[in-house]
Length: 304
Image (cartoon, rainbow, N blue to C red; front, side):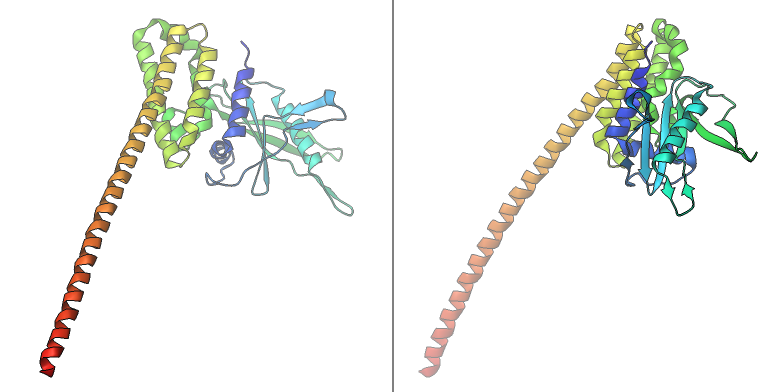
């Protein structure tokens, strides 16, 4: 099964909805960037001499002067830590600060997002020991986030919405059972109904409701890919998520109708108020004219 779709979806989220990656960075490094922090997407390609040695990273961002490098990985790979060192060293070289007698290399803060790593994996970080010619050494550590570790409630509590398209990966070994057992299918779909409801409410609270249809599209895209041989389950997931979009669109149109109705009502009320005010102004003007006439008559009587 071609897993390039995972990279494609992750990179698309970073490109189209970069603010959704911020909570992921907060989770990995214990930072507290707000949802609306300014994010600068940096070039994720570098070359070691020529195009044949091109290195492509999944995500390379800059936030408040700090560089962040994120890789999305399906399976655990013993060479991953070496690739991370290679990527990060390249970034450090590209951003090196040259002084009079000293060159400063600053590595980016990096982490790996694992999609299929066991939720109970005991290894928290990727680590490599680097020994220098003078025998001094340091341990290079890269934090890891395992998608399977996070349940629906925790995902939404921490706003880790970037994980939602990959939520289904944890069920891969259960697809046959889900496909052939209505009870299992029903329980499985309840999770997606919960995701649909919570996703809308969370994005609305973040004032990012425009991202809803995009995220649902990515959720369905991964589901369609993984459930290619489990048509029934795939169709039901699409019904739950796609149907929710239709309901939301219906609610949106109803809300617009109500708002337009209220606006029309306000306009009618405004016109009625203006009419009443105009009538009162006319009455006041008429009474003022009458008083003026009476004063004139009184003045004539006083002369007599």
